[in-house]
Amino acid sequence: MTNSPVPAPAAPSGDVVIRTIAMPAVANANGDIFGGWLVSQMDLGGAILARSTALSRVTTVAIDALTFNNPVSVGDTISCYAQLIRIGRTSMRISVEAWVHHFLTNSEQRVTAGMFTYVAIDAAGKPHPVKR
Image 1 (cartoon, one colour):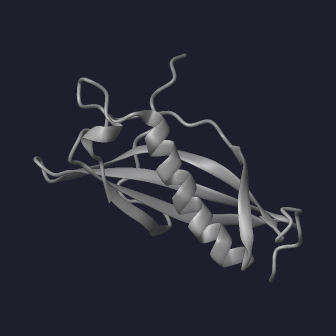
Image 2 (cartoon, rainbow, N blue to C red):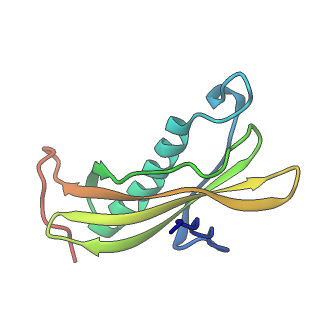
């Protein structure tokens, strides 16, 4: 029995939370964007949704596994889409997808996706219940 690859989604899930252009400062010598930079953009985008949900400061406590499916090149536009999946007492699970728009070919594809967990925190940095 062989495992067939899961087909890439045709369209993003969730709402656009951040959009930026990949610049040379975040690329390696081949012009490929560093994965860590992309994850940081996803984390920022997910935090925007978490903060507006919790109506307070939030902190990232977990990121489920990410697999990078497609490269990102200098000049590509990156869009992060986020969707609230679950609200716990103090935490929120948010699905975040990163999509790339290749400027030269005018094509779009998903680069990676992951589940991010954020916790609502007070001014002292202590967890508190998510406002509902």
